Image 1: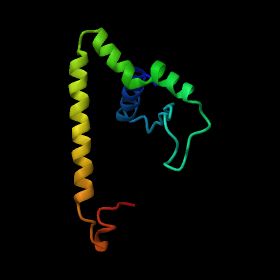
Image 2: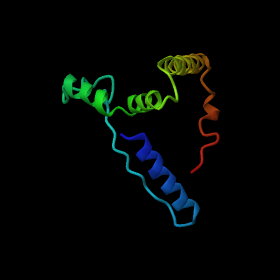
Image 3: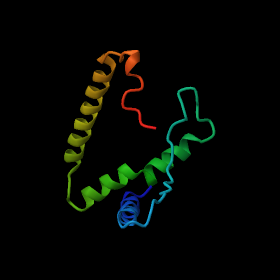
Amino acid sequence: MDVRAVKAAADEALEHCRSGKGPIILEMLTYRYRGHSMSDPAKYRSKEEVQKMRSEQDPIEQVKARLIEKGWASEDDLKAIDKDVRDIVADSADFAQADPEPDASELYTDILL
């Protein structure tokens, strides 16, 4: 769960594809902090395991630490960004909830097979 490794692999894959060498598949190894669904209590991992992964390998926390360490952002800067993102997500969720359901005739509009 290394952001810089993902960026490097994505850059290489993009160059590969753009140079006409064909498609490429990137396999991303990640860690789910929660269960598969609301009905999944995630009893197959201990809280300690999840917390250890969060504290040691969480890519967002790694990037935050690097930004602060390099002096590229302060803790206050990152808190402001986090608040802005949360506001955008909340506004988007509100918009989606308030938006009327499309007419049934629109179900297959712009669907490409």
